Image 1 (spheres, rainbow, N blue to C red):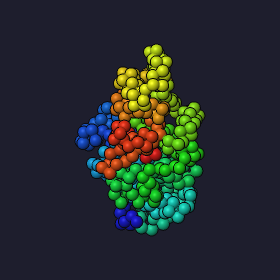
Image 2: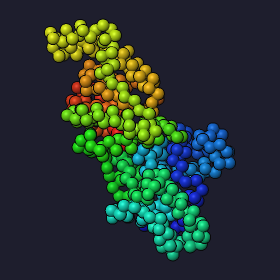
Image 3: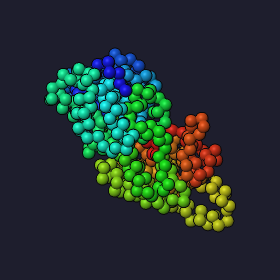
Image 4: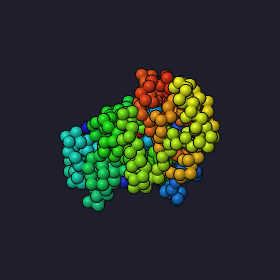
Length: 399
């Protein structure tokens, strides 16, 4: 419960959640660790992309006030976070700054969620303000117009942070374990219980409708794509699936690229490593000789032959970058990993590829979290010490 003796600040009505601007200000602070310099960048460099200087000063002042509620580790986390981690941390910032919203989120939104009540009607705010007014005269003194303005802004901010949908239904966020570790209890309780406990979403089948919906929802997020005022901070994601479900994974990626993401205004492309390999071998007149060699050579000999012939650095990487560039897409899916393993070293490709477009590596196997906190690609479920590890990607199922 919120301390009833603490006076409620009601200034949140002035600017709303301001998700893109909040993230940009957090990144500016992490870059210099100087609030005076951050304020200068807001006003003079216009890092929050607002036309009027007076608006930049007003919005910037409010955002700085909010963000000073975070410690250094939390600020760094917000600066690099995407999707639900970002939304959850912004809501924590808001709740720490405005105890009235923390009280409403904790005692109404989270409480209803824990009791499996699916929605938060607008009347719940009226009842909340009436009850809180007994201990908070600043609420009791509000005019009907001011009460309505607070209600509109409160529900608007809840929707901006995806805690409610447009029909006022409570919607789930799935922050990472890192978020739950960082956030202090004062902010944590304001998010409906269960939203900080999920480590990785698990779907028994990659072809399941709920898996498809989850993937589309996560990969159409503007922060992940670097759109609508957001600066993209990470570009590499992985989408693992059980090797036995390869045909379903192929159909999933095709449907997501052709229908689901375009329906959300996201241009998606698919780049197949196996097609790149075949095109290269054919262009070099090497396909038929390799087919003939396959009949006499052992598997290991054939793999070595292909590795010597097809360089990731000089062949695969340039082709992938060219195809993604030509597609003019918002996000690209790299497929054909299983078909080209192990002679195409995927971890090498991910380490060398240099593009501004988010990429999703779709592969049969597991993206494993190790005891030391590192992660690795286990293609075809072969431990990564046998095929090379990769440690800078994020699983789509962790978003």
